[in-house]
Structures are given as C-alpha cells and as structure tokens.
Image 1: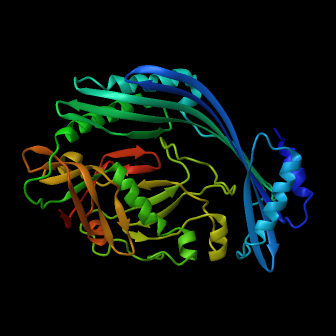
Image 2: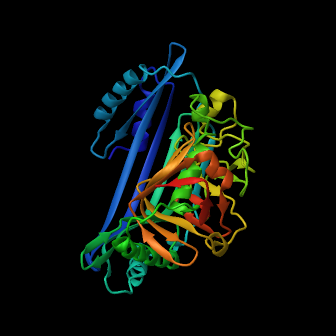
Image 3: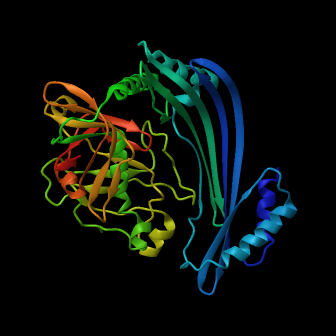
Length: 427
C-alpha cells in the first residue's frame, strides 16, 4: 500500500495545485450473522479508505476534484489520477474560499465499547436481542451484529492534522410474527454508541409486539378524527428537516424558507421548540469532534422558543456568508416538554408506529405519510390499524405540538420520546 508520505510527495510535485486534503477512514469490524437464532458466520473485517482532494485556483475562481486511493494503487497510477483530478478541478468555477488551517487533534470519543473485547461485545448484543423473544409465534428471523472501531484522519495543506477514534455497534434484525394466515417481517436497524443491552432488549421486545400487531391490523371501519402521536423515528426526521433550513449551504443557495429571527411557530399553543445542533451527544453514534474538512465542531442553538436564532454549517459556506463556521454538525438535540407519556396518551389519539416515510416540506407547509401500522386509542381500548394515511399543514403541527417529558437517543437524535400534534387529516 502506498504510504501517506508518498501521496503528499506526488501532490507537491504537481503544478497548479494550490491546496489539498487527505481523508483516511480506517475500520476494524467484528461481525456476527445469525439465521433463526443459529450463528451462521463469524468474522473480522478490516478496511482502509483514502480520498485525495485537490484544489485549483483559476480564472479568479476555485475548483476541486476528489478520487479514492486504493490499496493496489502505486505512485505511477496515483500521479496519473492526480493529473486527471487537476484537469477536472479546472472545470469547477466556485467562488474562492479558505480551508481550515493550523490545528492538530488526536481524540478518543468515550464509549464503554472501547473497554471490552469486540467479540464479547457482539455476543452480549446478540444475547440481548434474542432474550427479547419470549412468546410463541414470534421470532428473530435474522440478525447481524457489527462492533466497529473507526479511526478517522483528516489532514490538509494548511496545517490541519486531526485524528478521531470512536467505537460503535450496528445491529440489523428482522423481528417476525407468524400466524395461521401468514407472517409479518419487520426490518430494524440500530446504531449504538455504547453497550446498552437493556435498551436494545426493550426495543426489540417492542418491535416483536409491533410485528404481531401488524399481522392482525386492519383498516378502520370509519374515518378517524383525533390527534396523532409521533415516535422518535419520525421526530428525528421532522427536527432534522426544520434545522436544515438554518444550514449555511441552504442559505447561500437561497433554498431556505426562514432566516435568523423568523418564527417556525407563528401561533404556538403547545410547547415552544428549542433545538441545538451538536457535534457530539452522549449515547449518539453520530458523534464527531471534527468534520471531513477538518473543522472542529462547535455546538450551536438553532431554534429557541420556536424561533430561528442562529445558523450553522461548514467552513466554506460560512466563509461565503461572513459567518463563523460551526463545522458540519450532525447531531440534533431537542429540549423535552413537561407532559409525561401517561398524560400525552390518556385521551383518544392515533399513535404512528411504522410509516412508509414521514414527509416534511417546509416550502409547501406540508407534513404527512402513509401509515403501515398505528395504534388507535379511543379513550378505553387500543387497536392496531393499517391501510390509512395522514396529512396536514406543517405550521399547524408545529403550533400544536406537545413534547413528552421523557427523553430518548436514537442515532443522531436526542430529544422527546414522543410528541402529539393536532389539526391533521386522517384518511
């Protein structure tokens, strides 16, 4: 494999390159594959991905081009690919911008996965999944467990040299319910930042019950008219869409609807939203200390009391707008409400469990989705339903939203476990 020094030497020998960036992404993975509870495959997998980006100033503009450096590539091929990248960069006419500069870092993101043998960690996670299955007619048809050590190294021609090490676990499971007339399979995927076997067992247990409920769910015999309750999966999508409106890239491209100072909640009758974008959060597998440009990530509150109070984003677009870069923040942290789940769910409602995908569109003021499984609570009984959809004005949803006091962390999202919204059409 070509050495890092050789890559830098090749770049330095080329005329026309004004800057460069090298990203090295190394993964060590321990993996278990089960079918119907039986271990079929156990393996270790190591990989190293490298990417070189060259920057070329031309015609008062700046261009860039990137390519991957494979393990089989020698210096001659690297030189030829670099020449090609220089030509491609000259076809890009971006406004000039400055790369991050003069900062070094070598950091380990805290996780209990770093303190345990990866095989032992994978086995504990697998045991947690299978221990959730305690009822006849339910099964985990397939399970894949990955425990990964990831070392990310970013350096550039301006003095950036940063390394980050983090440990995560990735689980893919297929909870299945079998009945006389068929079966229902659900595909679940989780990214964990810790060995949280209690959470995983509870989560899989709930999904098995959902598979059973979907097996017998039917379309309601009459039109439903009630508030809906969103779970963390949909809230993650909702709040990411809201905060993207404050991203420097969208502001620079003039595709954002709101600017700093504008209200997302124009007539709030429920909880006022407070949302912070973060580089890292406890329990989040999306935590990072810097982005792929090498910019150190800086947390920033984006929404306070339902109003956009700041923007965020990568160094390039921050520079275009004359703003301080926060880096490409990937974690969404939402302040919880004061209403407990018991109070949130005590009145008639439709709790959405599986959607074809939550649709959120700020420009058309729309929220909606096709409902594959939901639980309708009429004030007394809870019934699984399917074959329906919902739609409404996003502005109405935000103005009527009630956030749970209970918090959960799901990948890049940390915030209310559930939320209730009103003024939606269920059909």
